[in-house]
Length: 294
Image (cartoon, rainbow, N blue to C red; front, side, top):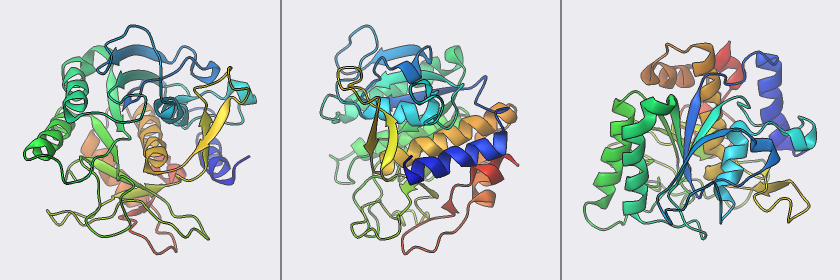
């Protein structure tokens, strides 16, 4: 088992002991879509395609399937060994990126606007956006993206956004992770790593970013090419993989404390995170799911 995946898995196993698995919580995943994978069977309650406007679930990239598996995979292809963080959550998948993992600001905004109108219908509490653009967007587009995700936050959703992979220099947080309201996640540097790329703050608003870091390197999760590819799991790295760790943890917390509000959860993340002895921007520190739920 991959060491990082093992650490995430046992944080959950030791803490919740099978009792808290994300029941009653829906998570929206804005990404490249999601594939039909055994570990995700029955998880997707809604699929919205803002790119090709197709019907039926699909993922022509693989990125979104990997992210979805980190959040909600039940691990059936590994006899439970490679479960996601919250294997009982429901997923609402909104495709905003194409086969190359690219998308226009307009497509991303379409997905966010759809979510603003429909989140209550599907009981969505958490939004995972493992997407980030550089801060050199055309005039006005950065502000539109930030305003859109902050409106989701204002509606009571827990919005979790990747810090992007443009670091490690200062002011390298991707858009819309540079929003002052959302929870921005960087990838925890592993010992011996030489090439750090996780985005770092502060932002132009002097906000500490990212708020949290989480394991994000060599994470094993669902392979969208299975069964055409014989391996049901594949490794990917980056802040995109760290972000769903936090989204899954948020779903666990809201499953245990369904009346909790997004600001309350954000403060709880701050109180329970752990500083790691690595030279990188960690914000409040590394997520600790055991402390979060204790």
